[in-house]
Length: 408
Image (cartoon, rainbow, N blue to C red; front, side):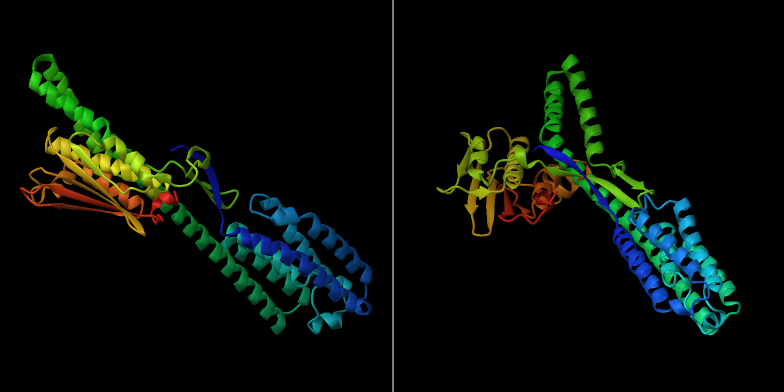
């Protein structure tokens, strides 16, 4: 099945940047409105008018800067905080002293918190503590004395900005952990898929070369010995440890994580379900009897292919462990909610404990080629074997796939 790659950008902090953009615009108009309602109380209103003209232009011109972490650079943050601190210190120049002493707002009012929050979202709680401390110092200088209202406002901005910065840091750490877990899961699924394909082809050929070469002897025997060594090495590889992570990258400038995911290419797959019978028909031979319904057995293309491959793996096990002359029967049942395929042989059966032992030796035919395929489809594979009475493998796949293969 053809695949295409799609890059998916995950960022839990992006909504915070959008909220900050709206906050800056709204609080800028709020500060202008406060000034307009108290215009007659200002001793030097032209100072305030000049400052608000600068604040208006600065706020609107810098909206792209606070739309995301990539454009919110350190020089911009420094300039933005300077605008806020300048407005606080100019309040005593523009406003009347008694009004300031009575607890009147500063020129930028609550717009100042937006500059501090930008530090918090960009750099975390340490940056927030630095910016809020400078704002606190400017407020104390503007008031001339640490009044109750001033201390209350300073502590409120300080605590809120540090809390938001800490939450952003925790969210980023959680995001990295989630991306790593998703990549590990995807790598594990890919390793299992490759192991199934290798087992269905390469390992079987190597095992056959080893057996035939050992039987012929001479140079063929040496070739068989080398094939056996390669088979052991390949089995160890496909059943080995975790695939190294190489596709998770952190983009610190963007404040986001980027991961690549593989998706089925819709243009390469048949449109709509396929008839499972057409995929199982090639397995019918003089030694393999196929019993199927008279009507089509529709399944999603990916589910039908994986189920047919699992049937092929079960028949390969019959030929390998029972012999080329073994008889096998395939029964297809189309249930309302699932499709059931049973593969039965007339061999001697599997000795008790043999399957766990085979998996421990790296022989993953049942574990990966059969159970692994069905697990990825949300189905099950049940194996029943009684010594002297053959082996039966029952494969069940839901018609509406609940497994990873349908969402990969």
